[in-house]
Structure formats: C-alpha cells, structure tokens
Amino acid sequence: MTARIIDGNALSARVRGEIAERAAALTALGVQPCLAVMLVGADPASAVYVRNKVAGCEKAGIRSLRFDYPETATQAEVMAKLAELNADPAVHGILVQLPLPKHLDETAVLEAIDLKKDVDGFHAENVGRLSQCREAFIPCTPHGVMKMLESSGTPVQGAEAVVIGRSNIVGKPMATLLTNAGATVTVCHSRTKDLAFHTRRADILVAAIGKPRFVTGDMIKPGATVIDVGINRLQDGPDAGKLCGDVDFESAREVAGAITPVPGGVGPMTITMLLENTVISAERAASDRKLA
Ligand code: NDP
Picture 1 (cartoon, rainbow, N blue to C red):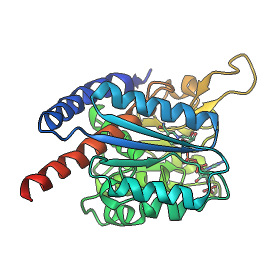
Picture 2 (picture 1 turned 180 degrees about the vertical axis):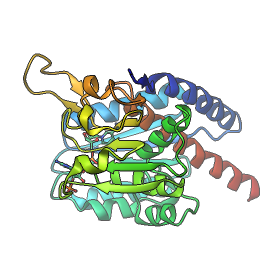
Picture 3 (picture 1 turned 45 degrees about the vertical axis):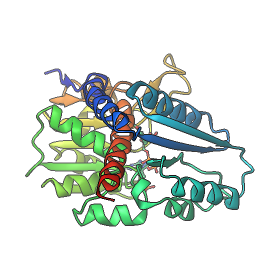
Picture 4 (picture 1 turned 120 degrees about the horizontal axis):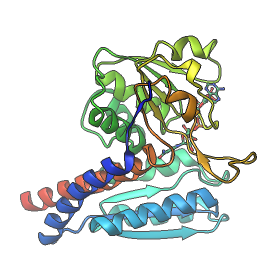
C-alpha cells in the first residue's frame, strides 16, 4: 500500500482564497486586516519564517508591518513597541517570532500582547480558554493540522491519536485540539519508554520532534494518518542542505494510509491559519466598530 499524500499547498491555496475574500470585504468596509510582525535577532530560520508570513499577508490583501530589532534589543524596547501596537486600532494581529534571544523574558513578552490581537494563540489566557473549549485564538500549526485531518477525511472522534512532542507551540495545543475533537490522545516525549509501542497503536500520528526522519515505517500502524510537523535541514549525506520532516517519508508511505510531505505539508497551513486568525481579529474589530 502507498499512502495518499495530504497536499498542504493545495489545501492552503483553497483556504487562502477564502481568506482573501474575507480580507477584501473588510477592506471595502474601511477595516483592512493588519498583522504586525516583530523579529528580534538574526536567526536565519526565523528570518525565512517572517519573510514567508509577510509575503502570505501581501497575497491575501492583509496589510503587514514588520519590526526588526537587533540581537541586543532590550526587554524595555520590545515591551514599548508591543504597548504601541496594542494601542493602535489599525493593528489586528501581533506576532513575535520565536525563539527570542536568551536575555529576553519570553513569557513576559507573550503575556504583553493584547489578548484580542494574540493571533499566534500563545498568551496563557488563550491557552487556558482553548483547554476549556471556549472561544480563543488557536495556535496556527496545530490548527492547520486539524484542517488537514478534516480535508483528508480522517475521522478524529474516537480515534487513537499519538502526538510526539510536548512543546507549548505544537505538541501541547495539538493534544488539546485532538482531545476537544473527541480523540483518545497519548502525548509522547523524550522521556517516553518504548515510543514505538505507542506510535504503533495510533490511527493518527503527529510527529513534532525536531529530529530528521526519526519516525520510521515500522513504528506506524498500517493505514494510519501520519502528520509530519518537523522541519529539519539535513546536515550531511547525499541530501545535505535539503529540508526533511521528523518522519522517514519513504518507509512511512509504504505503511500509512495518508501522510503529509515535507516541504509542502504542515508548513504552508501554519501560515494560512495565521492569516485566518488575523482576519478573524479584524472581523471582530469591524463588528465592535459597528456596535459602538
Ligand atoms: P521543541 O524542540 O520545542 O519540542 C520537541 C519535542 O520533541 C519535545 O517535547 C521533546 O521532548 C520531543 N522529543 C525530542 N526528542 C525525542 C525523542 N527521541 N523521542 C520522543 N520525543 C522527543 O520543538 P517544536 O515543538 O517547536 O517543533 C518540533 C518540530 O516542528 C521542529 O522540527 C520544528 O522545526 C517544527 N515546526 C514546524 C512548524 C511548521 O509550521 N510546520 C511550526 C513549528 C515547529 P522533551 O519535552 O522531553 O524534551
């Protein structure tokens, strides 16, 4: 059996078309959605992510503002810019690209973003609201994964779902969303004993580890839907310099029922959900304006 490919580029294009229509409708009302992106330091991967996010905005008719700070930026400088962006009614979404340089207090920075503009969904109150199934901004990567499961016709309710990774930005919110959607969820991490025992039970397997080609075909239940969140650049071997996921695509596709590729899988959907959150925030601002 060879797995069906869940094409993140195709799904993204479709969803971004709808987002562009919503953005155009808002702009016609005089409320052009606007995302402010802050980048601190010179991490090359972060610079690429920020560039892609800004380009995604432009194509969807969303205004973007970019604020680049040097590695040496102080906490006070970053906080002052956030206060300014929070107070600006023309800004609907604020994103601080992670990771921040070590000397900055990441938690304090994320908590300083106005809840209504927290389009990454990393503010502790958004995290809490999500876990209580209340209205919240849903973190973009796991939200994109849920859309991919839906588009691929993968049943979630009652499914055995295994998430490898427990980070705040991917693993944990992923587990929350799958739980909220009715899956039976197991979260695995570096301390998990016998990882393959868990992964082989999974109808839905989400890999968010950060280790190239870590999950191999023999760790996958036949017919499972495999979602590869990982983005790794290979350092050596014949594929040096190329991007790959946390799943060994070649062996996994022989066993899985459906699988996401890297690149062209979860990555484009992450940006798509960021654009959607920005439009949602602008829609709320427009409706608040009407009510005022
Ligand atoms: P983190 O490094 O924050 O988390 C990695 C997780 O993997 C940790 O929970 C860690 O466990 C676990 N882990 C590490 N080694 C093992 C192991 N041997 N066995 C089992 N679990 C292990 O990474 P992120 O969550 O931020 O990102 C994960 C991957 O997803 C990366 O490749 C990243 O580049 C990619 N990514 C992709 C995005 C996209 O848009 N497609 C967006 C965000 C991230 P422990 O907690 O015990 O240390």
